[in-house]
Image (cartoon, rainbow over all chains, first blue to last red):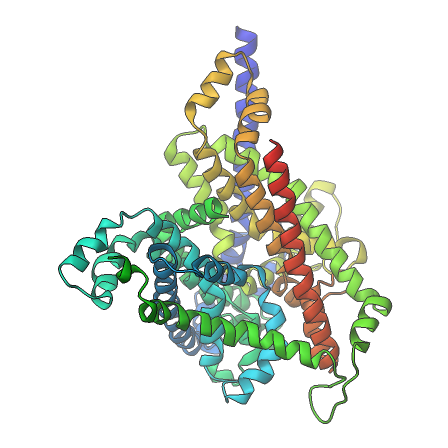
Length: 280
Length: 295
């Protein structure tokens, strides 16, 4: 009995250490960057493994904020991402509704077509869209990002919302129809609130993907003052290549909004991942 | 009532806008790609139709293309056979600790997944920097002598380093998928196995793993798709180098079109890449369906 117990205790210790080691591995890089973002660049080159700041250089953040154009880029990111997320959620809600709660011949085919967006890598659209969007004068406008962001987030969003809509009783809209209400009132007033958890999950997931997106922004935007937040870091790597401390401060500033959203909504994000896993 | 649920104008109004956006930004572009892949266009100026010449060149005479597919394949294998077992083991541990503790760890493991690839790549490029990176400093501490490895620049370590960054970011997803799957395992199943005298190892390999087969196969499909989609981390860290050792298909087609000014050729790569992506996904899905039926 004691032998079995001690084996169990050892096993437990091993497992807990593994948990902790991996957690440190995930967190430490971020701590490292933050730590050296408030020191002088020279401190980074010091011989010691890890040194805490003696005189915190908060000024690095001021420089990162101003020279990294954090404000301009954040506003651009906000305009693009908020529009894309709003459009994505409305359009995917509409498709999900029509495909799960209305009866027509091609609904499975349409749902299959929409899920195609998860399989096609966005990168295969980068070259042709540069020409195709150019024909409409879209290149170097915010629309050149909003449109493909919507197109590529539609799949996941539709799947998540469909899963929830399937679980609602049909009697919901039947009684509303009896009262003579039309689709344009039933969908936003009755169905959408009931599907709210799935819609919020889909919105947060699109928000994070769009907010962090880089390669489309790098391809379709040319003017410096139209670019999105990740470009702050790129800017520093070019112009201030040797000023690592300010670069680190810039990385922290760029990471901050996404982290904030994550901590505020982690419950919803985790739920969304689960929905995605179950739907597969 | 039935008439209401198949009201055609309503269906069209609900479905068409979304479909049109997808057609505009995803389907038509692939059509364009198909057309340009049959040309020798450099991106500007005049061009000629060259038939399937680009495809012939890619398939018979382009070792970088095959290298890039090979690297995608390596990433898929590492994800499935190294990342997944570790993630599964951790998920299994988290399924047995208190709810608060498991939530705490799941949140931490997921942090890298919500950061921008630009942040992540800059972060790891600095950690792996030969002159001040903390990775070398850590190894020096262990080895007792200075270590000056250029992790992303040396042929021997470049691919491994890039894959490490990708896995570091993706680990939280895998863990969360498995954890969610484990939560769907009925408690009676585990208890019945215990009563029958099965230890934790037996319980997991004989009872829980088979039960979770649908979720595991979904994760594998997701792994394949996301490995194919890796681009930015490579693009921003090694650019495919040294040589073409860390080249991935999505990076390669981009560089061909926009850096090497072989726009037609790049589109040929794009089209082949669509086939590989859709084809591989379908094959893996089919594979698991038939195997699942046998279970």
